[in-house]
Amino acid sequence: MKNTGTEILRKFAGRGAVLIGLLLIIAFCAVPAVSAGTVTGDATQLWQFSKNTNFIDTDISQDDTFVVTAGVTPYIYLLSSNGNLVWEAETDGAASGVSVSNGGMYTAVGTKKGSLYLFDRNGAVLWKVTLGDVVYDAALSSGGTYLAAGSDDGCVYLYKNSGELIWKKKINGNIYAVGISDDGSIIAVGKREFDVSAYDLQGNRLWSYKTPEQVLDVDVSPDGSRIVAGCSDGRIFVFDREGSMLWSYDVKRAVNGVSASLYGNYIAAGSDDLCTHVLSDKTRGEVLRVPSFSKVRGAALTTTGTNLAAASDDGTLKYYALPISYTPAPEATTAPSPNQPAVPVTTEYAAIDVTSMPQGALIYVDNAYKGTTPGIITDVSAGAHTVTVSLDGYNAYSTQVNLAAGTTTTVSATLAPITKSSPVTIVTVISAAIAALFIIAVGRRD
Image: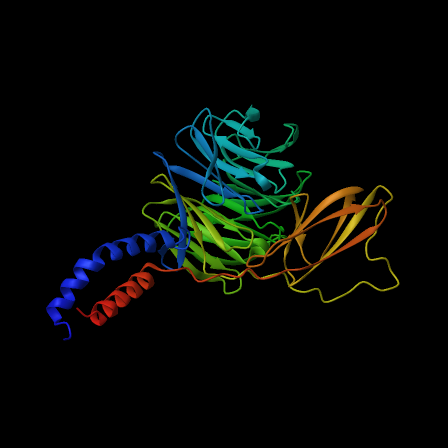
């Protein structure tokens, strides 16, 4: 005799409850933590770091491995790109601007007490100088060789990581923001007095542009091709290296922090409107808006523009994966003559000619960012070096080279795509479990 509906339900409840409970536990454990990140609009929140403070600024190292933030309480925090706290250190007051170099080797912070700090990779103070007034911003070159700082005393400073002052430039006004290219060849300066300007490594002014309002933040794309300025009236200005204003965009509320990806393909702007706006250099408009619960004080993009850090007034630092694609550099249209040497090298140095498939990958020599493929790295000291080639969505390629002085060594990297397995979802596991138990219950006989 077949089971009646009541008997089926009774057996299903009695015999399957424990098994369902176990399967639910397994389902929750089977979902990877990162894959289940919070989705905010079209951006996926990967992690959040919170403190009882108002965060003022944030920065991501150019090799995308470390994130730094600081706020109105006298502490600075260095985190890994997966959100783990690496170290925290105490300063003499509220922070105004922060920066971190590749590999977390150097971290800088300017404070409202007028101090400029440089920390090592373990959070120990390498040196500290007092500049006499509020240090509103600090910016490290990617390898940490150079440190630029802007102060309320009307001066821009450029230091070596040893603490040696390279130059001090009195330009009058209040220096609210500084930015620097990867190699330190171009330094951007933003002033309260409606002005953004650029300087070279020797301290020579390259150009200046009058803005309609106060410049609250500036950034230089890693390759130095784009300079971005955010203003107190909500306007964002994008310049080329020579100072030509290419385009602008208005978010209507004060722009507190700006960041540019490699080649300036993407620009992030944190605003008083409780959002971080992601702009495209190609479309010259907004492509994504990431909301927050309070004013966004600092915004930082990874080199590829595919990840975003946003620091807010509510004491949260949020790290997102953005649904945008990395655009490699345009392919070269000319090639050197076969009768000419590809790279001029001296007897003291060597060169590395790096290519990859696909092109547009990031090149690192001994963990120092050197550009994108195809590229020729000159003035590399003779001896052993590690060359790493990486591109978002592909497994990194790394090799050891032993360079002889006066020669050019070729490195060719074929990058393999990262294979991503579909994560097991809770709904899938629960649905399958319930369906299986129901079939078993129906099929059972006395």
